Length: 223
Length: 138
Image (tube, rainbow over all chains, first blue to last red; front, top):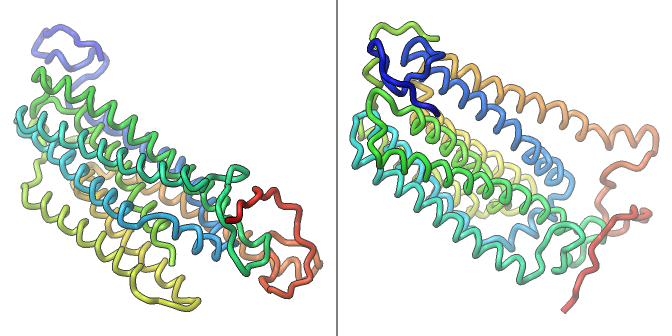
């Protein structure tokens, strides 16, 4: 974002094509909400694939989901919820011009996101070790006593890796923008008059948490 | 966009609100896990468990969207944008499931192969050519 020079009382962060600070802030926020609307639709394709496959192969989902550790999934859920709290607190810190709290909360958010990825890595390693992979790469057990073509664990793991993988990509991207905003915050760029980047990164991060809130029961708690 | 009088002071929520929402989210997560651990046993109950878990997830989502994302206190335009995507999501799911759930019925009339045949260990069905991974037995 280019910074203009101050003139006629216009602050430096107010870009020349916006009339007022409020207009710039609300335009940026609307842009982010439009992006989030897209993200919802983006993930809805995979959620629908999940729904269709679970509808047609309930025993596969029941069986294959046992391989997932609900404790790790639950831990990750709490980790992301906590990161959402620290992110929301970061936005509030910016709103109250509290740079120290802002940088602290951003770093905490970043750290929790990192913890999430570490837990994910542990889970994925376990899957790879047991050959619990999508589609034709599946090398694990088949369900005993169920007609062959109804036992499709590779279907479940295709869904599992696609959804959690795409989500993890979003977590990584989120960490990158959180880091960017943190570096700017450290330089004292944000205060109650201008905290738009913090706010919008926060909105994105909450969506990442939101998606996981649905992923967790659907993937880990199939009964 | 929105005609506010003096918008120089951002709308700051009191700290207790943040911690209360966080606490509710943690409790709801524990409830979700608790629901899954209930011995809902036999068939049919599994669907109830799913319905309950999804309801809890929606409550959690409402808390995150309403408070953490500030949608409750913001210009209504952002709500319109967000909920319109939810509307299309509902449309997407409904229409697809109207199709998926009516397939067996179609096959009864025409005797065509459907995506899923009646599940039966005695089914003398010609199994479809499924691209299955070779299973490793121990």
